[in-house]
Image (cartoon, rainbow, N blue to C red; front, side, top):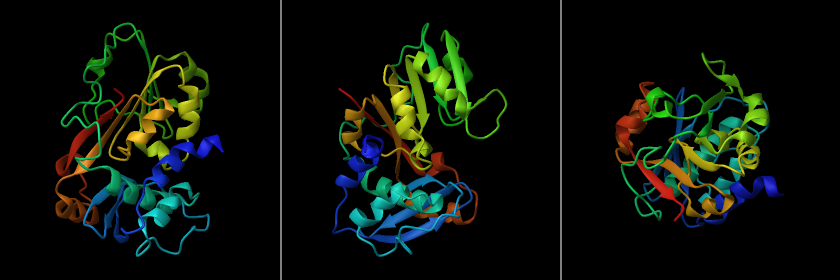
Length: 242
């Protein structure tokens, strides 16, 4: 199915020889540590009413555990995406430009922008960044001041020429539809949940702005202690279409 292509591309690049060694759960984030020591994170998405694909991802080959990104048990999908990100989000993942902001080099003058997930004021985007845009539509699944409900995506994304999507949309499975609605726009995926997998660029995504964990032990401790700050323990990296 075309709707699973994003996930298929992620799964195809995962190894059999590396396994999932550890999972760490927090209120906002889930982390995974692989047998080779690589660490990744993904936004924790609540939802455990549907049976899991696997009883546990721990000990499974990454190529097998990664299939759980398609799970409708959202907590399992969060774990799987964290494991996938541990593999892809490294400094040698390809076409990488370190320490680049989400919107660096993007001209917003007169543009119609759609933002999925209210990210202004979080990370590296401010309201001032969008002051020269013709229109900014912010849509979020959660009720937040100034944000439209995410159902508004069906109405507004087709008229946008730049769309910025939170990486957590990969967990809740809204991402394939968001990409379809944004097919005529420049598309940026951003946030710690983004998988920096170059193969994803063939889907019409122009920029993957994810995170590489550079202080894994500190990050795991922070998640457990519920004082998680992704920015404190990771570096922004960019995979960009040439």
